[in-house]
Amino acid sequence: MGSSPPSKTVVPAFFFDTDVIVSWLIDETDPNTGYSLGKAPRTLVERIESGKAIGQTSLFTLLELRFLLKRRKALPREKIEALISQLEPIFRVVIPDELALLRANALQADHAMGPIDAVQLATASLLETPCTFISRDAALLKVARLFLEAKTPEELLGFTT
Image (tube, rainbow, N blue to C red; front, side, top):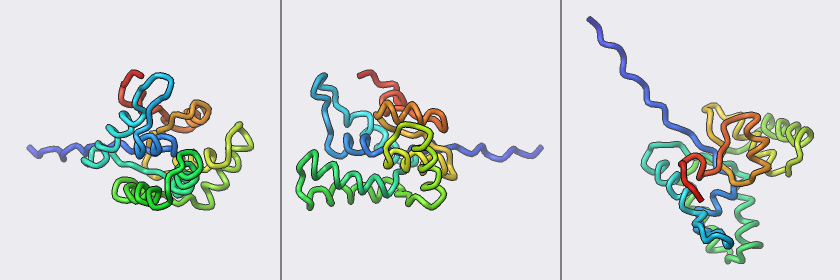
């Protein structure tokens, strides 16, 4: 009797939208409820760091992070770059290609969405390995769910806010 080959363990892949990365990096708190917006993303990042998941985002996230952290959070450039450097060992940073930009253009034409959201969704939807799109942007999640699995970090983990 031959033994069957060992079953291959599938490691879940996540594509993080910028808002979730910001919450993790600066450990944001919801000003209305006091809920730690960084808690669920931190749990997902710990899974990635331990090899139990794959973390991905796009180059557009880095561009958006610099803008948000400078303009909205008023952090100095050195602090922003230090925060962004934390992403490199954890996340695969995907550079959107021509196909992703063409799909983003079509997404934006068909749905009410901003250009960066369209690029983020197009990039995630074209990845070789299927992934779960992670965001807290309700409008973006609504469109994303038409194309791939999309959840808030809390939904994915079963956290209540």
